[in-house]
Image (tube, rainbow, N blue to C red; front, top):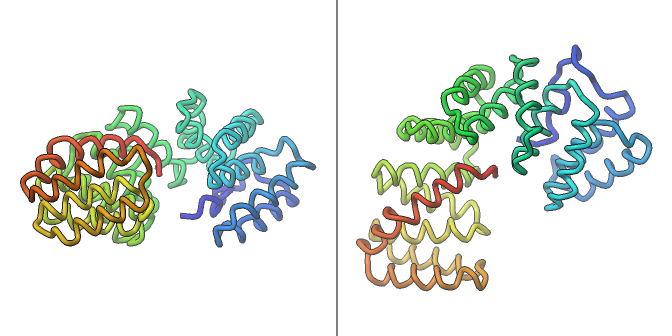
Length: 297
């Protein structure tokens, strides 16, 4: 889903951007659809010079700067956007999700307000649900995410987040169903494939776990951990040639801190399937699942 694709939720009863800002946002959206985040940021920075306190410009500039890896600057944009006391639920939900990644307590109020004032907005509901799940309120999270699925059944991210919430609720079979649906709707979503592979590993569906971990690793070639997980899973299933291929992919992308783990996994692959299963099922798989459940891709 394009993060600039819905900037006012289509709800004109809420605060809407001025015509001038709307025109700027549309111009930025065209660039965002092509992944031209430098251009998006430049357009919005220029707009900020004439409208320094506009919450829409601040919020979507924060989105662009986050895409560019400028997390600290983006954080300040989102804070300033919320300081203007906007009422647009999509803006509130977007900024709230961003602040949640920094454990900012202002995130909860923004997300809750968005969901309460726009109960028919799938984005407001799933973002609040995703926040609740990661804050340990799985039952409440699933209420929001079930509502979001009903509102937007063809949105992959909604099913992805419901899968995450079901993991937190210790419903791993249910999580597998939701994650599978997310992948069906967005086959290029490598993050969901890796999560599904790790869930299937936990429920001891080893063949499917290996398949999904390999698929996710190939979709995310820069994700070193994903290559290593896939290497162990493939070895576990007796596919040593592909396991060594994944190990080499990790070696190419890895850096010095990865060296010790690379050597350990290489040794496990050489020892055979049982050694790979022991490492993957015993420690590395559960650890990776916990970390990825709490991380927002």
